[in-house]
Amino acid sequence: MTTRVIKNISELTTNDPSLGVGVTGRLHDAAIVIDDDRVLWVGPNAESPAADEMIDVHDSAVIPGFVDSHTHLVFAGERSEEFEARMNGTPYDGGGISSTVASTRAASSNELRAATEKRLGELRAGGVTTVEIKSGYALTLDGESRLIDIANEFSDEVTFLGAHVVPPEYVNDREAYVDLVRGPMLETCAPKSKWADVFCDRGAFDVDESRAILTAAKSAGLQLRVHGNQLGATGGVALAVELDAASVDHCTYLSDDDIDWLRASKTVATLLPGADFSTRADYSSARRLRDRGAVVALATDCNPGTSYVTSMAFVLSIAVRDMRMDFDDALWSATRGGAAALRRDDVGHLGIGARADVVILDAPRAAHLAYRPGASIVRQVIGAA
Ligand code: NIG
Ligand code: FE
Image (cartoon, rainbow, N blue to C red; front, top):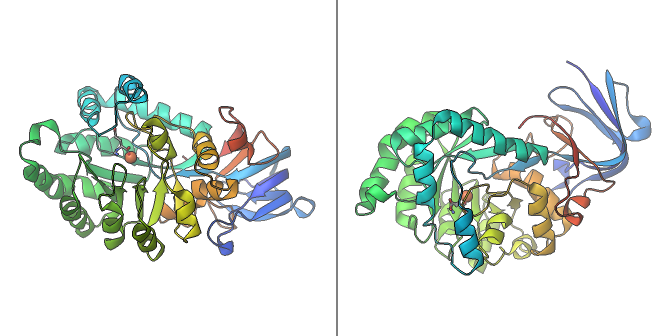
């Protein structure tokens, strides 16, 4: 096991968990010591212990690796024409998902693997060291099982999303599709997934259908997450809280009751600014959530329909500029918040014992991530992804 000391850090964001929600635990003129797996020491530069190797970052900022808790990385094809039409006024209604389902079903496993690896490479180059990956673009038993196998090659945080939409061949028999998802499809996919997710919204699954699928998934040993309140106030948040889902994602439409329920629960509100940007939706009320005490995560939602985004820095820029989050809050939400949304204590922070997922920036302050939109200021990424 090799130890490394990273020295001359102008600004070190630790997110030390003992400091609480939203607190970045910033140190200036700092150093950090890691081994191949874990953080061993954090403190003032002048007091840093010796190690086998030394990295001198010459007054650059260092942050924990981003935790991208919501992606749909395994897909084929693209939908730029749909994006262009949307920019010219056509609203998003989820209908385009069937086009990605057709391309994904037609793709070979090697094509899907290569496409996933490429997108993951983009995420990692931008500082992501933990990524959740969903299925959801096959919507047949064998197809979902294949996407989950591929996702497992790249992440431990794999989510079964058989309930993305009702596929074309079941439009006249939704009930049969719900039964397939909560029955045989779940039975095949649960043993190789950690999470189950449902798109509980207009044009996808209603609250009763979503509850039926999620409760079956819970009985099969999966932990839960929900796509909710993206296209309307459709009850997804309340359902996620009722079922103790780790996270409810999108939250574009939120009532005061929704926020109160979230605050009183362990369910994280995961906001996806890339999706609001690319669908020309109103941005989620990040400030209302934070001001009322709910825990917020930020993620890319990388997918070909609503958010073909692989840059967490871009997500931070929107969160700060358009959602009016404080930069520190946004950075915490994209790291420690993402970890909370995955119920993980070992990532998203650089406290002693945390996983050694460290991102060295080409900037003196982490705020450059939002301040310099479009520039790639990630110099070095240490750790998994
Ligand atoms: O998170 N909302 C549901 N699922 C994806 C979009 C899927 C698609 O349009 O391909 C999302 O926004
Ligand atoms: Fe999504």
